[in-house]
Amino acid sequence: AAAQALEQELPEATQGTTAKDEGEDGEARVKFQDGTELAALLRDHTSLEACVQACRLGPEDQTRVRERMATLRAHVAAGWRALRSLRDQDLGKAVRLVWLTRRYLPFIAVSSLLSAATGVLRSAELYYRSQSLEVFRRPAWTWLAFRRQVWALVLTKAVVVLTSIVRERIHDAGERGIANTLRVEMYRTLL
Image 1: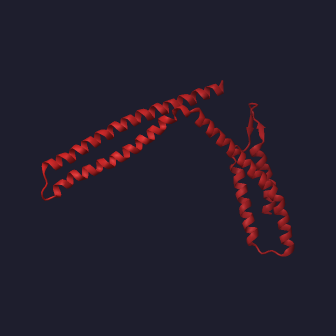
Image 2: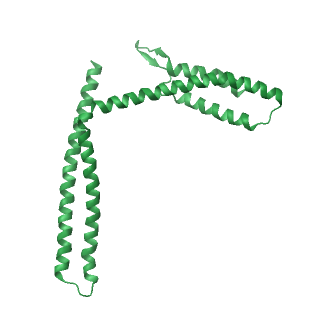
Image 3: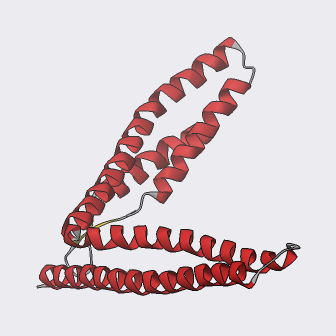
C-alpha cells in the first residue's frame, strides 16, 4: 500500500517541482518551489526500502514487492534528478551573487583578518593584565616591572581599539558596496 501511494505521489511531486504553472498574473511559477515535498517523499521511499529488506516474505510476495519497487525506482530516479537540478540552480544563483559582489570581497577578507588579529590582541591584553597583577605576588617586585607590564597592557589595548575601528570601517565599506551592488542589480531586474 505504501509503495502504491508513493507510486502515485512521487510523479506528481516531481512534476510539480520541475514543471512551471501559469500563475494568476500570467507568470510561470513552480508549484513546489523548494522541493521539500519531493524530498520528504524520497525519504519515505528510502524508509520503505529499508522495511522491505527487513521483512521476511514468501517467494511470491518477494517477487511482487520487487516488481513494485522496480517500477518505483524510475520515479525515484526522476525525483532525485529534479532535486539535483534545484540544487544546481541554487548553486548557480550563489555563484552569480558572489560574482556580482567580487569587487568587495577583499574588504570582507581584510575585515575577517583584522577580526582575527583583534582576537589575538585581546588575548595578549588579558595576558598583560594578569601579569601586571602577578608582579605583586613576587617577593622582590619592583615598580619598574609593574610599569613595564602596565605599559604593555596600555599599548595592547590601544592597538586593539585602533584595529577594531579600522576593521569596522573596512567592514562597513564592503557591506555598503555589496548592498548597493545588489540593490542596483535588483532594480535592473525589476525594470
